[in-house]
Length: 456
Ligand code: ARG
Image (cartoon, rainbow, N blue to C red; front, side, top):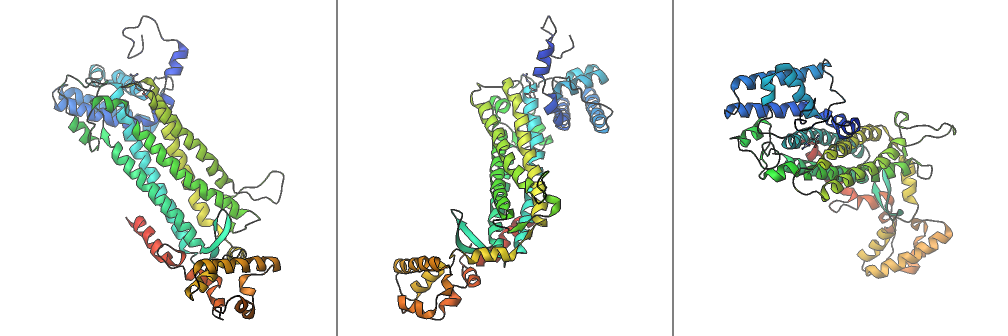
């Protein structure tokens, strides 16, 4: 029988079982980590006198040969193999004979795969974190270039108070900075080494788990062998961090899509990041943002896959866990892909200052400022609120703005009105007066906060 685990079997596995059971299409991606883990294990086994130094040297040379042969394309990962662990051990034994058969001493595929996945995800998470940093940098650059682009700030998608584009984009930068730290935290919790947990109950060999943990760059070995082989918290946690980052990207996508519409026309995407229609010659579509919004659902699906996968499993390893990789790899890859295209799309877009300003001029977004003007002159805020509300109603009927009432008309309503009211409700002044910490006129502090992140 050809299989590494088939010693107690009398017949060959069914072809359907072989295909169904195989995970190599996904875990083949982890060949480097599998080799790295095996080299650390063999090194430790020799140091502890569990295998000879000579055998370990042959194993390590053999594994390094397999690594370079896969990298150069000389050795192709067999798509019919059961998984990457079996494939590499099989090739090793074919190539070096007896010593290859000693590699799996004091080890199970259960601790092996748990180690490989962590090593692999550590790299993928680092890539995602770099992508987030790159994206925050793009938001920062666009924000910095548009500190004087006044636009309406919305609540309920109704024009509410004036802000700037810089202020709006800096809000997103804050979200992605938190996403970055969520990944960083998750990686910190993941970085413990399950190797040496063996199948579930450790081993009778005098292994040194501190040593393998150290060789592989882990903080420490996992404390409990059952937990070591059955924990996939880290995969769910990374998928959650990815889901939330996608949520943030999806919100921004929604805004980009609206901003590109004829109704808004705040933003014109560069041709290189927009698409056309096969029937309507006039169309220029924000497909990237729409795809990102759509792919958000797919990443949520990955998270739900992982949570559901784990929830009913008795300790310790169960084959269900083989399904973990596809979901978490997909979540991280999808997020990376989205960030890597969204950044240049934002950087190359052209914002329309005039349309944003015109939108801010309509909708009475200086009404709060007029109420505040009266309040500062002594009128109780609630009375001022009521007075301005009445004015808005009249202005709406006449299709004019608050600034279009004459001073006489205003004075009829309250003697507190004076000629300085006009500058108080001027749109630019309304923005520039909002200098409380975190407000649109306090943008320099916010840009600094982002710079600190980017320079860290
Ligand atoms: N391909 C398997 C996985 O990804 C490796 C572990 C198999 N262990 C076992 N006892 N069958 O989970």
